[in-house]
Length: 294
Ligand SMILES: Cc1cc2nc3c(=O)[nH]c(=O)nc-3n(C[C@H](O)[C@H](O)[C@H](O)COP(=O)(O)OP(=O)(O)OC[C@H]3O[C@@H](n4cnc5c(N)ncnc54)[C@H](O)[C@@H]3O)c2cc1C
Picture (cartoon, rainbow, N blue to C red):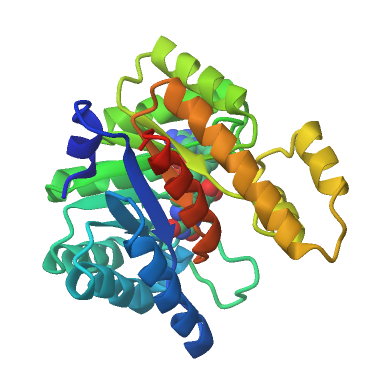
């Protein structure tokens, strides 16, 4: 499956995709099976598998790709994160994806693992996702995707510069962009307008991160830079700290409203960051499906 073909086909329903990471422990693996049971039965077009920076999750990612593709018969997009990897490492990973029958690779830079003192980047490691796109484009026939940041990447010099790098990703072979999550759709609409204004023509897919817990929300904000708008803060402040279900429900309602609005604005797809959890995404997509929106 070449993901860009799905996004180009605007005769059908919006493309729905779910993102997963490899399970780190046997207990997490058991839980992931249950999540996959639930989300395999939820309306979707493909699932994607993340890649740990420095290749740390390489084997686990291959196994999860294999499970999704071959055991569950799902369309799969494989991610590669270039940080720290030399040319041989990269071709090794890409050859493995090819051998697994992967046709779409999502190309990201990844972040240097802060907690890993042993992390030693290869001297020929590529500095940016756009360089990795060129590397892959010159050697493989994968359909390529890349990341975009409606509020600007956390280390970006400016949003404007970051948008120019999104254009560079397109020029280097990206056929679609998936956006970092946001909780105010205006960030996404402005981002798309600004991308279009400088010639980014490829599909830009909103990333949806339902709020799962307050601590996870705060942790993600600190590493991803997506802001927590005041109405969201106020809504969460009205839920007691012990009421975990209340937070989940708030997250489902917020994301469902976001998705409805995005779909009314004609987005070509919705990409869900599942964080290997099933309940919220299942609830959101099922509601949108009942409403005939996906
Ligand atoms: C949809 C999505 C999926 C993700 N999946 C993963 C995953 O599986 N594994 C993982 O480790 N991380 C993942 N990430 C996180 C991602 O790796 C980080 O956000 C990382 O810091 C940036 O990756 P990038 O591909 O956007 O990098 P880049 O495009 O290289 O950008 C990184 C920074 O450099 C700047 N920049 C970009 N190009 C240039 C240039 N040519 N010259 C100078 N500056 C430049 C940008 O403005 C930005 O500040 C994902 C992010 C998203 C949005």
